[in-house]
Image 1: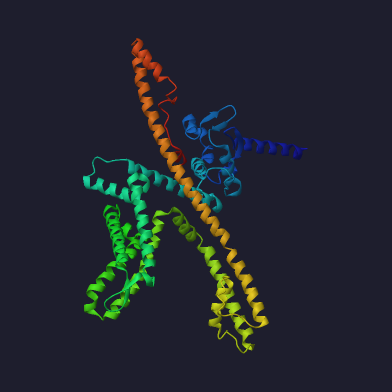
Image 2: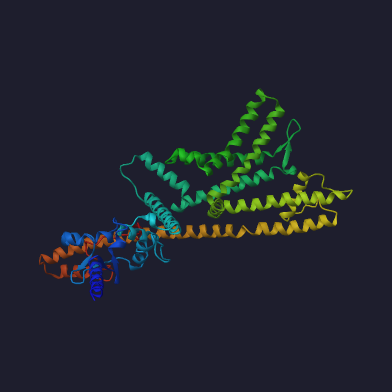
Length: 487
């Protein structure tokens, strides 16, 4: 009987000990009970600090929570319950997974509030968080650029203001109507110079010089010179007005601009001065080689085409898929060219002289080009060609879908970011207007409190409560845009 009596005492003591070491937390209406053995695994967290805050009095308690019920010994928090349900997994599983539909930035803020380190967040969720951070940084950057364009610093010198105006005039066509005209002119000059370069190679459009050599028509040369003059002036003005000249000079698109301009001046220098330093034939060969570099100016179109920029970015993000495509093709080319060479050796008039020569046949077959300059003549060779054709179609088709997805995703993302930046500006303008309205309403309230009666003041007070004013919160409230709230 004595043994039977001890067991209830032990259970009672265990129950009392559990009741002493448990805390009740109410987060947004969601009630949760925690025990000290779980919370003490992470003593730096806010929930673990609640275990010891009761001894510090109400100041210590309310420094950690929003409200406290002494009767129920229940702590109240006005926080997101959905995020809280995910965060408390760290006490049971040692890691946190973010539920789908929760804003990653808001979830990060919740983790910081509960004093849970981000290292417990799973890698897949960290990826979403980093993507959202990048989006917000891009939105902030675009908003800042727009604000910089709109703002005028009176303390800046006249030269600085002139630099900003020229930079905005040449780099941002959406800033004004004249800037759009300049962008269209630049686009037309690029097209004209490219057309002139192509037309100049037509024999009927060429003339014979004094030495009997065929050269471009003088009219085409004049058009070319005018286009180069425009490109040169545009590049020099952009370089002078650039806020960061080193970054400007090393930018890829600006390097393309230099490559489009440089051959003209180098050819001009070699034509007039090179004859004194080297033979005339060498000068002409060097000039012809440099004139080929004029094709670089077609890449200037990317500056004025958001579609080309999006395509370039999609290709950058698709290096892995492009690498897989090249690897598939390389393996197939090697295998089918070797098989084609081996199978065609039995034919007396074979066109497969060597395996390296067969590479060309495998390339044009697997890419479905098929020039017909080299082809199999045996039955086994034709069967090998049919298999290589099918494998080539499959190898090319497989990576195309991810590349298209990258293009569509980036294009849609850019549109969303552009819309979000405009929305942030609208919110800032709205908050600014509300702030001015609040100050005017406070002035009217002061006038009314002074007891000034009369039709003039009563009419002013009526205007302050008209439908044209947005009902404001108290002055203690801080207005924040969506971007600031996420941060």
